[in-house]
Amino acid sequence: MVTKAPKADTDSNRNIRLHEEAKIYTPGGQHTAIRIIDPPLCVRRAEGAYLWDEDDKRYIDYHAAFAPIILGHCYPAVVDRVVDAVRRNDLYGVSTTEGELALSKKIVEHVPSVEQVLLCCTGSEATFHAVRLARAVTERRKIIKFQGCYHGWHDYVLRNVISEPQLVNKWDPGSAGMLHEAIENTLVCRFNSLEDVEHAVHDNPGEIAGVILEPIPHNVGCILPTQEFLEGLRTICDREGVILIFDEVITGFRHHIGGYQAISRVVPDITAMGKAIANGFPVAAIGGRQDLMQRFNTRIGGDVFFSGTFNGHASCLAAALATIEALESGDVHEHIFRLGERMREGLRAIIRRLGLPCMVAGFGSVFTIYFMEERTIRNFDDLLANDGDLYVRYRQELMKRGVFEIPMNLKRNHVSFSHTEKDIDWTLGVAEEALGATFDARAAGEC
Ligand SMILES: Cc1ncc(COP(=O)(O)O)c(C=O)c1O
Image 1: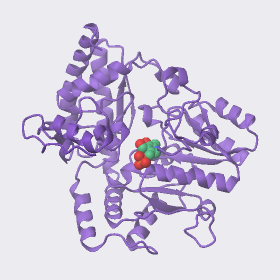
Image 2: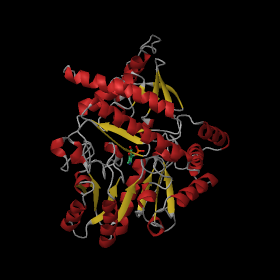
Image 3: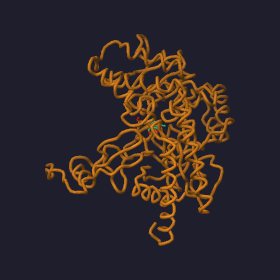
């Protein structure tokens, strides 16, 4: 039986109380595992670059809801389009709509690998369909992923993301209840290592259906791919008849309207997209070569199942169209790249000035500080030197001072179009204080 909780308090600790009450109705009090933080932060409203919690404390937000918020929170051009759309449209569950056509055209126009596209609601759905399609097309079972990459919650890909040191590159399923067969048919290689991929292909002759990767593994901060690595994957996949899948759920639209493939000029067979495509609304997509996409049974005669009750909801289509139109001029990317660089350079200067054993990483609008000496980061092995306790403590110190970078190890931060140069400079002042406090806490043995 559910114990009824008292009504939410009105005293100054509503933030904590709301979370405590939520725990009665929901395991842990939050609806996604990677939303658990200490202290809890319950957001009441958001606007532009800012969030306000239940105690009305304001935070400048670099978490961006794990990356979708590229224009800013409740961005007027997106909200107006959504409100206008839902006055007239919602969801019909039959044939197609003009909105679905318009969004499909935009994705095909902008993303190099995409000749045809299907819309869904989450990145996990997109990667699930990508893997299943690769298996159907090749009639092979195994796929290759890379240690440190996250592609969603399904059994095909949920292994070896942020592994404990003893499990890196080894057997590390991400959940109880996963099918053993699914885990063992997903092979794990080190990012940026063509040698690993060649070994996996060699050891599993004619068995590899697909290779899936985040072109930049942002689920562990930021590991930049070498051009040689991406081109080498393309070559191996062509040689072996393997489907190359870019998971551009984070990199797509955020780093370029055409995804990282438009920057690297390495074109995958299939692309999974999501997050920043709709500035916070639940839109995702899978797209790719027409001959592959034609296998989906959204076409009569197709034999790869594809479905979703909420696919193409009018609110989401409106949000995605408004977001993509905002990105088309290039002004958004110019702004967020410039401010991202200002942030990274500013943080580097602070670290140098204070003589701290930290390094800054990032790309475009994405930045993070790793708590380890400066080094070249090629793959997850290189991140084992990062001090996770300091990583989290620093972000807790930022939170105290009104900056929100989620206090969780190896998570990245994002600049949006709503941040200003003044915001970045103010944040840098706070970062300097927070770094000082973090290393003071370490010296005092508190973390
Ligand atoms: C690269 C990548 N792929 C796929 C996913 C899964 O997307 P979703 O959470 O929308 O299912 C995520 C989510 O963080 C992601 O970062």
